[in-house]
Image (cartoon, rainbow, N blue to C red; front, side, top):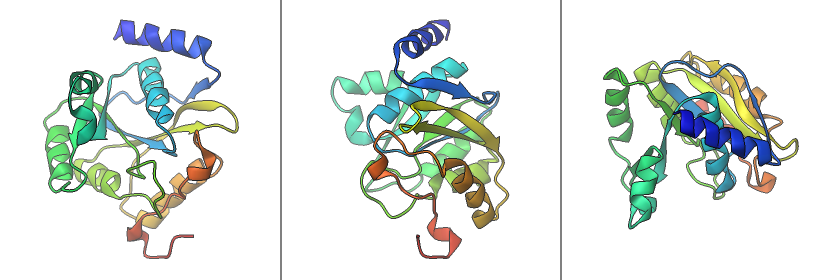
Length: 193
């Protein structure tokens, strides 16, 4: 881990981006990385995680794990996801969380960099079912900052929990601001604004 921390320190020293962070989580949890608007989000989130002192796990479409990129993606903490058939993914991750293994799972709630109307709720279900805290991680091109925000425990009141997230991410634009998706889950029971 010391080598990864050194890599991150060098990266942040030379980067145009500024790293900012609240205290890093010390136990297993979900690192909710938003807004997800560019492939550069991945590089920034690795830098954030390594600088904060942990090796993240992350979900990636299974196509990224084919060929020579596969071993690299797995070494970086990647977990392949079949986006056409994601059944059982949350259950598998809940089992892993309950096994006692310590990890920070980076999840991009949009599920893609493409144009989507709202966030996907898998992170919420996983956090509730496995009793994992959620740390809000961000990148904001308008201020050229990225880092870790507060760690929250979801209450089960979806709207109230999402109101907390909306307030935090309200001024975070992502790497490509035109692709930003408003934090909203279908389970909130209202039309996306």
